Image 1 (cartoon, rainbow, N blue to C red):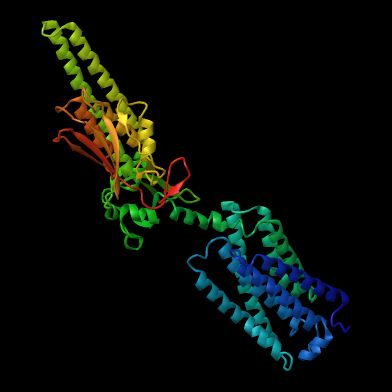
Image 2 (image 1 turned 135 degrees about the vertical axis):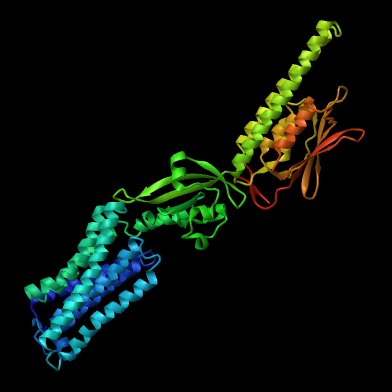
Length: 547
């Protein structure tokens, strides 16, 4: 075989081709993973560079076929020196694109960056290719040759070094991936960055294939040893932005000048604003009810009535940079509308219970006064006091059950309740007759089962008459399931039955349930109308879905 250089240089070129082939094959296995395209370009560039060096530098037949007259080891006009400069330039551009994607800094500038790097590489490498073609027939001035190579090395090395700094900063500042992984990646690109200097210093063509082989080997080791494309800094740096965007809480970033800088979709929904419309506007114009961020950060969480009609709990934290300088405030907004309304209902329940207890204690005092005055026998008075105390104690227990059910109520999930299960559970603690339909098809309605059971128990406690026990029946309708309680006469205002009816209506407040009393009939009846569950609703604890 006619060798233009030396057996050692030829062996180095063969090793470079083999190593590059392995690198290309390794990268093709991960071609569908994020950020692999620039690195696939690096692998293909190394392979093409190794093949070109093998053919037009080491092998005489190829050199003669393309008409290369310059000596293979010549520094001025030598094709090998052009490869030694152009190969790192192309790799530097691709490495820069990989570093941008890998560290998550290309989300907004990706198309512009790709176009800019492509144009830069054409301007750098294109003249060198023309120079290589012309050098076969004419002599190129040394100054032109050096100027082109100098411009190529300065710009390409600058691109590559920026990429290296991005990877290292992400590694050590954000702890995005292992230090060994960053070392292998940096070493792989560094082996090519030093190639122009080694080539011009040693003036040995074998420097190019040796650099290619070293770079390809280190890149391959990094991909094989570490989960390079699964532990992206995108998941820990840019991924944080995605996590913020998908948070159930609203996040608002306010600058030191009090103007809104950014907010996530949930904040837009909670505050009823649009990011493009409010970005750069003062916070007090966007949410007039909101105090200054510094006040929120100092005072702690505070409730704000947003224009969307929701009650929003806002907390604030001061944001500083690496040097401790204040750059603004981060506000976290949480929708507490349902919680605050539930707390209000619980407060009203407590007030109702206190009113009922006070009324019954007044009745007890009146009975005791009647006994003392001789208007009522002690036996009868004692019996009435006992019955009154029992009713009050039962009402207190039922109200506590409702309070517990409301406190545990799920704010977000659409809960499905089987009416037959609730009525079956009512049979034991009640004195009334509970009629449970015998059907294989569940009577599914929307709402919390605990709230429904506590409400029914409260109503049944004061239902019925002295001569008739209360009965509970179910009536199916096309859009609802009605639970009928009869007889139910609330009696005089501020009576125990009247309080139980108020409590029941308060318990189902802001739900789709309705409580209707028909007291002007021969047999007063109370009806709780429950809308049927539509769509796919998860039944708590059963894991079964129904439509």
